[in-house]
Length: 362
Image (cartoon, rainbow, N blue to C red; front, side):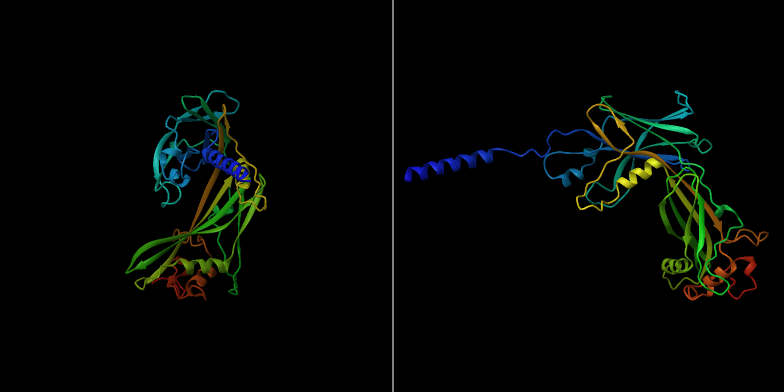
């Protein structure tokens, strides 16, 4: 029995020593991964594309994430080429430059700057909405090639651009009502709409501009249709109240403008957004989507696509010769100045059509 126990003890110690000598390799066979995020917008003159690499290494991943060089390629050559129709010769070619931009406070990843790549178009020669744009990346001495291409989102329009359009947030009985904000979506597959509200706050006659954005929603749309968003009247006045500055030195406020901002996204962008939404499945199984291709054994994730942002600004008061031009109608202005939600906030109207009213600015 004593010999048996001695044998089992030796066997156990041998297994223990063997198990301690084996190491688990968490990194495995690492496959180089290129990460690309780029959205072209013909309403912009500077076009940014984020290009970096997935990182892996020994030690704490959160520590590696704090090192910028771990996420960058050192020998990247990137170009964007413009093709018209079926031509195989580009009409314009841009070589992307890199720059550092401020983007966020410190967190899991390095901050407060990040490297991005960009090219710019001359104001009189923006991106052509009839063209196709190709992104080509060459990395690691040309051993890795990444390609993506996109057409532009175009033909977005809205009746809010008309000088006759007015937002109406109350009816003649003082009841809050919604205003329909409609847009023709062009070839968009997803659309976002928001209103940018602007007003001046006066201290001893000196104005300070105050603005805030009111998000009206983001929805999937069908190409060449109209999409209507709703701007609720009561919400409008509550947002005004929530965004004024609390300062006893303010002695007057005047409304300035409402800007309707529509952003349409391409089908590829909508697909990418849909795939990357949080999973509602208990299994957390999610597909992947990218419209980029890569050579060799490396892999690529991300998107190279397009969006289009159109902004229509409706001034509250434009010109004495155009008394009918105003972004909110007379009844809505009255509610702003003396109504139940914002009546105590010192708003008055500088519009010439309101000069007979008690709430006209002195």
